[in-house]
Amino acid sequence: MKAAQSSLGAALATAAERFELPASVIDAGVHALEQVQPAWRAREALGLEVGAKVVAAFARAGIDESHLAGSTGYAYHDRGREAYEALLAGLMDAPAALARLQLVSGTHAIVAALRSLLPSGGTLCSITGAPYDTLRMAIADHPSSLVHAHGVRYSEAVWNGGIAPRDEDVMDALRRVPDVVFVQRSRGYAPRPSLSVAQIERLVELVRAHAPGAIVLVDNCYGELVEQREPTAGGADLVVGSLIKNLGGGLATSGAYVAGRADLIARIADGVFAPGLGSAVGPTLDTARWCFAGLHRAAHAVVESLKTLDFAAALFAALGFGVDPQAGAPRSDIIQALKLGSSARISGFTRGLQRMLPVNARALPEPGPVPGYADPVIMAGGAFISGSTLELSSDAPLREPYDVYLQGGLDVTHGMLALMSAAAGVLA
Image (cartoon, rainbow, N blue to C red; front, side, top):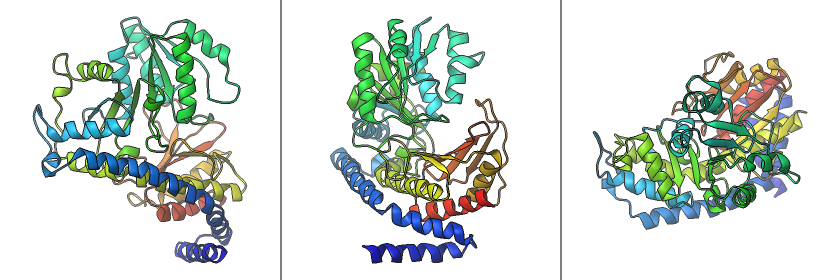
């Protein structure tokens, strides 16, 4: 095994020399590659289990060419759409799903769900603290938000699934009898860890004990197929996410989904389209083939992302930077935080990553305003599907503590080389 690792490291070093990377970065990359081998074997083993779940779902579904044709107009009786949503529901451990092009992002799907589920003047509690900036704006900070335009009463409590959660904060929120409890699985642009399905299950039990009528909605973005189970298997009523992240497998061109209880899915469909029409409409155009194909390879794409993130953690730890999570640690999403400590290092990282992305490699990232974010954000992104953060990308709000958030990676070879380029940018 040692000889095989050394051979693999030598191959990486030779590949990295093509890009004229500093010797210190190449050495750190070789060390990181050898360090992550046990973690990669564990990721691949879990990927086999999750992949088998996907293969079994397709085997049961009986997809044929007619399901791939797509639809136009109102799209009544779209067999492909119905089969895709049934497949997706099964993989999300849920009875039903609504997955549509007409939902353009995870944020859009979450807000659509909340509008459909919250009564006028209803109560919403985000029980994992403040949600990511864009969603918080839609909930509370914009003149047309749920709070200001729809009279929703909104509160936030802090529970992060740790050994000693701040139960009093949570209990106070649940005593207000919220109509909907919101759980953000991934970290967003925050220092807190992402939540595992087991942690979400414990949180759901707490909600059921003290606010039994509340609907538990989980933002599942970046978390799909990372574990064997999804939050709906842990008791959540609904999970919501984007189709151009994990579940799209790098091929789905647009869309978002909501999966969970059938009665709640029906209410959301009425809210998205119109009461009485609900899930009966919604054209798939020419996207059905790519949604099916992406879902079929999604488990493998997630494994490649997790391996890329392990390498990133090992590489930057070797270079003396803080990382969260550590290489090989349990993961429940496809996001890696790298603690770079200054705006100059973040800019160097972003530009070094961008030069290795397959699209817009010659672009020079600069910080700028992003809708929904209070601080300037600098991004590296060069995806074949615009905004597809399953493809390797990074985001960093320029604010203390100056962390950069790395997402995805469809191909670990590309990921390793791109991250070594980013490291060279940090050290320049």
